[in-house]
Length: 291
Image (cartoon, rainbow, N blue to C red):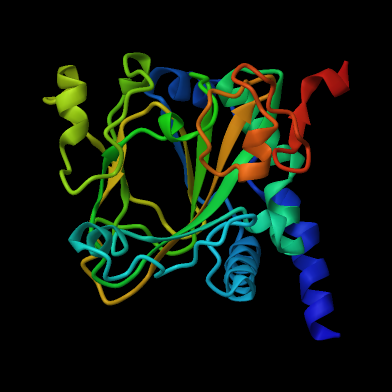
């Protein structure tokens, strides 16, 4: 009974997230391509998010993504590169599809409204959520872009990144290159061993000053999927846990890349088809519903 009571109590407090954006925050995001919101979650909400993520990961038994067979550690020992990449972070995708508490968190309409306001779109869909966990002594996350990995090309796509632990210079906080999203394209070197590979592709930013995003646990950042960003190594014996969600503007179309989609889903799609499968990419906010 105690667990039920706590869950209901925290569920009531979900509305206390700092979901009301000011015009100055929207303008700052539009200018820089990212926005940090301190104390995004209340103390109770942070506890709820941590417990929900932990339980959802535990119940997945290592499965990285629903509809696929890959598990954490499947490619351990294959080669030197796999060993390196597996020590960047552990990645668990679409926890909302396999856990009811995560579904309530990720499908929160107010969170969707924030994403839509920052992106400047009428409607927003979940592309995928991710738990990103840097284990003790984890490798750095190289500078990269997000949207080029995904199955659609839209310059307005974005992500939220919620710190479940303090994200610091020592344990792997994020860094952003301000205003980079205005000039980058869908070309991307990916997350490689070469921290600076992105600057070989976009040399105009090689001398740019990065912004450090130190965040207390419970704080959050939003960033455009074409904003150049990366993260430090974890130089501590503790975890650096984050829960993220990538958002797709409603009406985005298939670009031919599989990414998180299953073989069956890809077989039914043609390039240019609208990605509007509510079971895979639910519409979590639309201002058309308010008109």
